[in-house]
Amino acid sequence: MDFSNQTVIVTGGTRGIGRAISEAFLKSGARVIAVYAGNEEAAQKLKTENAEYAENIFLKKCDVADEAQVEALFKDIGENFSSVEVLVNNSGIRRDQVTAMMSIKEWNDVLSTNLTGTFLMSKFAVLEFMKNRYGRIINMSSIGGQLGLPGQANYAASKAGQVALSKTLSKEVAKRGITVNNVLPGFIDTELLNDLPEEQKKEYSRQVPMKRFGKPSEVASAVLFLASKEASYITGASLEISGGL
Image (tube, rainbow, N blue to C red; front, side):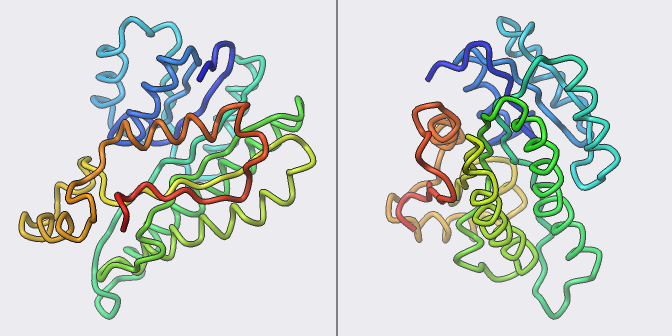
Protein backbone atom coordinates (compact mmCIF):
# COMPACT_ATOMS: atom_id res chain seq x y z
CA MET A 1 0.00 0.00 0.00
CA ASP A 2 1.33 3.40 -0.99
CA PHE A 3 0.19 6.36 1.14
CA SER A 4 2.70 8.89 -0.13
CA ASN A 5 1.39 12.46 0.09
CA GLN A 6 -1.50 11.36 2.32
CA THR A 7 -2.14 12.59 5.85
CA VAL A 8 -3.43 10.04 8.34
CA ILE A 9 -4.85 10.70 11.81
CA VAL A 10 -4.55 7.84 14.30
CA THR A 11 -6.16 8.37 17.70
CA GLY A 12 -4.51 6.44 20.49
CA GLY A 13 -1.71 6.31 17.98
CA THR A 14 1.30 6.05 20.27
CA ARG A 15 0.75 2.72 22.06
CA GLY A 16 -0.33 -0.84 21.37
CA ILE A 17 -2.39 -1.41 18.25
CA GLY A 18 -2.45 2.32 17.58
CA ARG A 19 1.32 2.51 17.51
CA ALA A 20 1.50 -0.46 15.14
CA ILE A 21 -0.97 1.30 12.85
CA SER A 22 0.98 4.57 12.99
CA GLU A 23 4.22 2.74 12.16
CA ALA A 24 2.62 0.82 9.29
CA PHE A 25 1.38 4.05 7.71
CA LEU A 26 4.79 5.69 8.18
CA LYS A 27 6.49 2.80 6.40
CA SER A 28 3.97 3.22 3.58
CA GLY A 29 4.91 6.87 3.06
CA ALA A 30 2.16 8.69 4.96
CA ARG A 31 2.33 11.72 7.20
CA VAL A 32 0.95 10.49 10.53
CA ILE A 33 -0.78 12.64 13.11
CA ALA A 34 -0.61 10.46 16.22
CA VAL A 35 -3.18 11.66 18.75
CA TYR A 36 -2.71 10.72 22.39
CA ALA A 37 -4.54 11.48 25.63
CA GLY A 38 -1.68 12.20 28.00
CA ASN A 39 1.13 9.65 28.05
CA GLU A 40 4.02 11.90 27.03
CA GLU A 41 6.60 9.15 27.48
CA ALA A 42 4.88 6.82 25.01
CA ALA A 43 4.40 9.66 22.53
CA GLN A 44 8.07 10.62 22.56
CA LYS A 45 9.08 6.96 22.41
CA LEU A 46 7.12 6.56 19.18
CA LYS A 47 9.04 9.44 17.64
CA THR A 48 12.52 8.51 18.88
CA GLU A 49 12.18 4.85 17.93
CA ASN A 50 11.01 5.82 14.43
CA ALA A 51 13.67 8.46 13.86
CA GLU A 52 13.97 7.63 10.17
CA TYR A 53 10.37 8.85 9.71
CA ALA A 54 10.62 11.74 12.19
CA GLU A 55 9.70 14.41 9.64
CA ASN A 56 6.41 12.61 8.99
CA ILE A 57 5.41 12.11 12.65
CA PHE A 58 3.23 14.77 14.26
CA LEU A 59 2.22 14.28 17.89
CA LYS A 60 -1.03 15.91 19.03
CA LYS A 61 -2.40 15.76 22.57
CA CYS A 62 -6.19 15.67 22.68
CA ASP A 63 -9.03 14.18 24.72
CA VAL A 64 -11.22 12.76 21.95
CA ALA A 65 -14.26 12.83 24.25
CA ASP A 66 -14.03 16.62 24.62
CA GLU A 67 -15.73 18.43 21.73
CA ALA A 68 -13.81 21.68 22.25
CA GLN A 69 -10.48 19.86 22.17
CA VAL A 70 -11.43 17.89 19.06
CA GLU A 71 -12.60 21.04 17.29
CA ALA A 72 -9.33 22.78 18.20
CA LEU A 73 -7.37 19.77 16.95
CA PHE A 74 -9.01 19.89 13.54
CA LYS A 75 -8.59 23.65 13.34
CA ASP A 76 -4.88 23.19 13.96
CA ILE A 77 -4.70 20.40 11.38
CA GLY A 78 -6.57 22.51 8.83
CA GLU A 79 -4.08 25.33 9.26
CA ASN A 80 -0.99 23.14 8.97
CA PHE A 81 -1.91 20.41 6.50
CA SER A 82 -3.23 20.86 2.98
CA SER A 83 -5.56 17.87 3.31
CA VAL A 84 -6.42 14.85 5.42
CA GLU A 85 -7.23 11.53 3.78
CA VAL A 86 -7.56 8.95 6.57
CA LEU A 87 -8.90 8.80 10.14
CA VAL A 88 -8.35 5.75 12.32
CA ASN A 89 -10.48 5.90 15.48
CA ASN A 90 -8.36 3.75 17.75
CA SER A 91 -8.64 5.51 21.14
CA GLY A 92 -10.13 3.13 23.64
CA ILE A 93 -10.16 2.31 27.34
CA ARG A 94 -11.52 -0.45 29.57
CA ARG A 95 -13.01 -0.16 33.04
CA ASP A 96 -14.08 -3.76 33.70
CA GLN A 97 -16.67 -4.56 36.34
CA VAL A 98 -19.70 -6.83 36.56
CA THR A 99 -22.78 -4.90 35.54
CA ALA A 100 -24.49 -4.94 38.94
CA MET A 101 -21.42 -3.40 40.57
CA MET A 102 -20.44 -1.02 37.77
CA SER A 103 -20.40 2.65 38.73
CA ILE A 104 -21.90 5.30 36.50
CA LYS A 105 -18.39 6.77 36.16
CA GLU A 106 -17.01 3.45 34.90
CA TRP A 107 -19.86 3.32 32.40
CA ASN A 108 -19.56 6.93 31.27
CA ASP A 109 -15.76 6.96 31.02
CA VAL A 110 -15.72 4.03 28.59
CA LEU A 111 -18.67 5.23 26.50
CA SER A 112 -17.24 8.76 26.34
CA THR A 113 -13.82 7.75 25.08
CA ASN A 114 -14.72 4.77 22.91
CA LEU A 115 -18.01 5.87 21.37
CA THR A 116 -18.38 9.63 21.82
CA GLY A 117 -14.75 10.01 20.82
CA THR A 118 -15.43 8.11 17.60
CA PHE A 119 -18.45 10.31 16.90
CA LEU A 120 -16.61 13.59 17.48
CA MET A 121 -13.50 12.67 15.50
CA SER A 122 -15.60 11.33 12.63
CA LYS A 123 -17.84 14.39 12.60
CA PHE A 124 -14.96 16.83 12.13
CA ALA A 125 -13.05 14.50 9.80
CA VAL A 126 -16.00 14.26 7.43
CA LEU A 127 -16.07 18.05 7.15
CA GLU A 128 -12.41 17.91 6.07
CA PHE A 129 -12.93 14.98 3.70
CA MET A 130 -15.83 16.66 1.92
CA LYS A 131 -13.50 19.42 0.68
CA ASN A 132 -11.81 16.91 -1.63
CA ARG A 133 -14.68 14.41 -1.90
CA TYR A 134 -12.41 11.68 -0.58
CA GLY A 135 -11.76 10.07 2.78
CA ARG A 136 -11.35 6.87 4.72
CA ILE A 137 -12.58 6.27 8.28
CA ILE A 138 -11.64 3.05 10.04
CA ASN A 139 -13.09 2.45 13.49
CA MET A 140 -11.29 0.07 15.80
CA SER A 141 -14.22 -1.77 17.29
CA SER A 142 -13.80 -5.18 18.92
CA ILE A 143 -15.04 -8.74 18.80
CA GLY A 144 -16.08 -7.97 22.38
CA GLY A 145 -19.00 -5.98 21.02
CA GLN A 146 -20.39 -9.23 19.65
CA LEU A 147 -19.25 -11.72 22.29
CA GLY A 148 -20.21 -9.65 25.33
CA LEU A 149 -17.50 -10.85 27.69
CA PRO A 150 -18.42 -10.87 31.40
CA GLY A 151 -17.45 -7.69 33.21
CA GLN A 152 -17.40 -5.63 30.02
CA ALA A 153 -20.95 -4.32 29.59
CA ASN A 154 -19.61 -0.78 29.10
CA TYR A 155 -16.86 -1.85 26.70
CA ALA A 156 -19.14 -4.16 24.69
CA ALA A 157 -21.80 -1.46 24.41
CA SER A 158 -19.25 1.09 23.19
CA LYS A 159 -17.81 -1.29 20.60
CA ALA A 160 -21.20 -2.41 19.31
CA GLY A 161 -22.13 1.27 19.15
CA GLN A 162 -19.14 2.00 16.92
CA VAL A 163 -20.40 -0.55 14.40
CA ALA A 164 -23.90 0.93 14.45
CA LEU A 165 -22.53 4.45 14.08
CA SER A 166 -20.44 3.34 11.12
CA LYS A 167 -23.41 1.78 9.37
CA THR A 168 -25.31 5.05 9.52
CA LEU A 169 -22.38 7.33 8.69
CA SER A 170 -21.28 5.18 5.76
CA LYS A 171 -24.67 5.68 4.11
CA GLU A 172 -24.62 9.43 4.74
CA VAL A 173 -21.26 10.03 3.07
CA ALA A 174 -21.06 7.29 0.43
CA LYS A 175 -21.82 9.64 -2.49
CA ARG A 176 -18.97 11.91 -1.43
CA GLY A 177 -16.18 9.40 -1.93
CA ILE A 178 -15.87 8.67 1.79
CA THR A 179 -15.88 5.14 3.17
CA VAL A 180 -16.45 4.12 6.79
CA ASN A 181 -15.49 0.66 7.98
CA ASN A 182 -14.77 -1.24 11.17
CA VAL A 183 -12.00 -3.55 12.25
CA LEU A 184 -12.93 -5.96 15.03
CA PRO A 185 -9.81 -7.32 16.72
CA GLY A 186 -10.05 -10.27 19.03
CA PHE A 187 -7.43 -10.88 21.69
CA ILE A 188 -4.38 -8.91 20.60
CA ASP A 189 -1.12 -9.03 22.53
CA THR A 190 -0.93 -5.45 23.87
CA GLU A 191 -0.81 -3.72 27.26
CA LEU A 192 -4.62 -3.69 27.25
CA LEU A 193 -4.44 -7.36 28.29
CA ASN A 194 -1.70 -6.87 30.87
CA ASP A 195 -4.09 -6.22 33.76
CA LEU A 196 -5.85 -9.55 33.26
CA PRO A 197 -4.96 -12.43 35.60
CA GLU A 198 -2.51 -14.85 33.98
CA GLU A 199 -4.95 -17.76 34.20
CA GLN A 200 -7.65 -15.70 32.49
CA LYS A 201 -5.27 -14.84 29.65
CA LYS A 202 -4.47 -18.54 29.24
CA GLU A 203 -8.18 -19.35 29.13
CA TYR A 204 -8.81 -16.68 26.49
CA SER A 205 -5.92 -18.08 24.45
CA ARG A 206 -7.43 -21.56 24.64
CA GLN A 207 -10.73 -20.21 23.29
CA VAL A 208 -9.06 -18.91 20.13
CA PRO A 209 -9.10 -21.57 17.37
CA MET A 210 -5.56 -20.49 16.35
CA LYS A 211 -4.51 -20.96 20.00
CA ARG A 212 -2.66 -17.66 20.25
CA PHE A 213 -3.23 -13.95 20.64
CA GLY A 214 -2.93 -11.77 17.57
CA LYS A 215 -0.09 -9.37 16.86
CA PRO A 216 -0.67 -5.61 16.54
CA SER A 217 1.00 -5.73 13.12
CA GLU A 218 -1.63 -8.19 11.92
CA VAL A 219 -4.34 -5.68 12.77
CA ALA A 220 -2.40 -2.83 11.18
CA SER A 221 -2.18 -4.65 7.85
CA ALA A 222 -5.96 -4.89 7.64
CA VAL A 223 -6.36 -1.21 8.56
CA LEU A 224 -4.02 -0.18 5.76
CA PHE A 225 -6.05 -2.13 3.22
CA LEU A 226 -9.34 -0.54 4.29
CA ALA A 227 -7.65 2.88 4.22
CA SER A 228 -6.33 2.38 0.71
CA LYS A 229 -7.73 3.65 -2.57
CA GLU A 230 -8.04 0.01 -3.62
CA ALA A 231 -10.77 -0.50 -0.99
CA SER A 232 -13.02 2.04 -2.71
CA TYR A 233 -16.13 -0.19 -2.88
CA ILE A 234 -16.01 -1.37 0.74
CA THR A 235 -18.04 0.69 3.19
CA GLY A 236 -20.22 -0.01 6.20
CA ALA A 237 -18.35 -3.30 6.62
CA SER A 238 -16.80 -4.98 9.64
CA LEU A 239 -13.67 -7.12 9.37
CA GLU A 240 -12.97 -9.54 12.23
CA ILE A 241 -9.33 -10.16 13.12
CA SER A 242 -9.81 -12.69 15.85
CA GLY A 243 -8.05 -15.92 14.98
CA GLY A 244 -11.42 -17.55 14.30
CA LEU A 245 -13.40 -16.64 17.44
